Image (cartoon, rainbow, N blue to C red; front, side, top):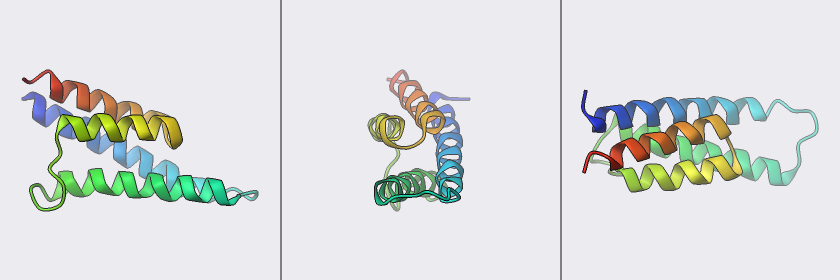
Length: 97
C-alpha cells in the first residue's frame, strides 16, 4: 500500500467520523446559533473530503496540503478525532515526497 492510499484511507475515516459527530451534534436540547454554524462547517468540510475521495479529479484534488488544512480546522472548531485522522493522513501524504 502506497502512502497516497493510506492518506486517502485515513482522510476517509476521519471525515466519516467528523460527519457522524456533526450529525449527532444536532441532537442536543440546548443548541445555540454558534454551535449550529460549527456543525454546518463540520458537515461541509467532511463532505469535501469524502467527495474528493469518492470522485477523484472532479471536485477537489485531495493532496497533503488540503488534508493538513482541513484537519487543523476540524481539530480547532469541530471534531477532534476526525480532525486528527485527517491531519495524520496529510502528514503521511507529505512523507511520500
